[in-house]
Amino acid sequence: MLKDISLGRYYSGNSIFHELDPRIKVVMFFTYMVTIFTVNKWQAMVLFSVITIAQIVIAKLPLKVIISSIMPVVPIALFIALLNMLTIREGRTLFEWNIIVITLGGTRKAILMASRLILLIISTSVLLTLTTTPLKLSDALEKLFAPLKVIKMPVHEMAMMMSIALRFIPTLVEETDRIMKAQVSRGADYDTGTIIARTKGYITVIIPLFISAFKRAEELATAMDARCYRGGEGRTKLNPLHLTSKDWIIGAILLVLAALVLVLQVINV
Image (cartoon, rainbow, N blue to C red; front, top):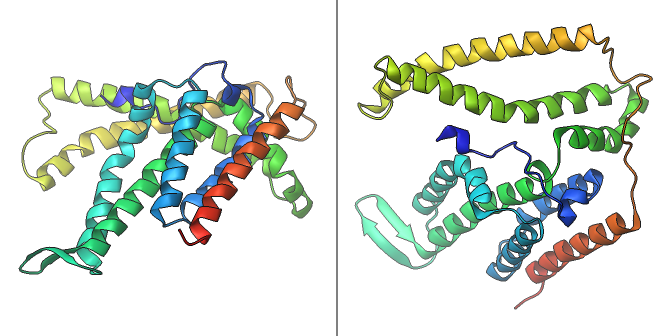
């Protein structure tokens, strides 16, 4: 069910990752994102996978939560893998039928691209959304991008928008599930018929969802205005962020692990 998707949800816990300063997690997320799209050797990919699994264990996240967080991107990963498998023709031919040719190089590239996407989503979930509240994430982004205030960038407003967007992902997913159930009770069918017919059927979901989203946005704007919200100028934090020695040590360890992955990519093994 759509309501089981954990994308954008915060999973409460008391692990090291839950207590880690969100600025460290944001920096390490971007570091891991660059790392995963840099490596293409299987040794480096295996090490990165082991590091990701270790993060899941340390964060004490249930397997069900991790699976539900990657389910939305599984169709995309499969499509990317299929596209690479059918278009890249390198190495020994594994299968050939008419214009369809599957080679060993194309298969390897397909597995690599799909693995990259899945590992990226898992790392994002563990380092950010599942172990960091939207408020802390907003504070971290505002602190990290604070130098941009020199060139008159609305850093606080940008961080606030990103935080609100993450916060409302679960809400919109639940709203979509509710609308679909209501339409099914009225006779709508989203599982049978041609692709075009099913696509047209989803119009009955998209239109009410857009109306509901705009209504929620207007209500949120009214609530913020009623509380005299005027941006970040002069605002204080109830729980200001402070980097501790533990944050620096964990950040250094994560950085060293990312460096090890890049070392395996560079050396000839």
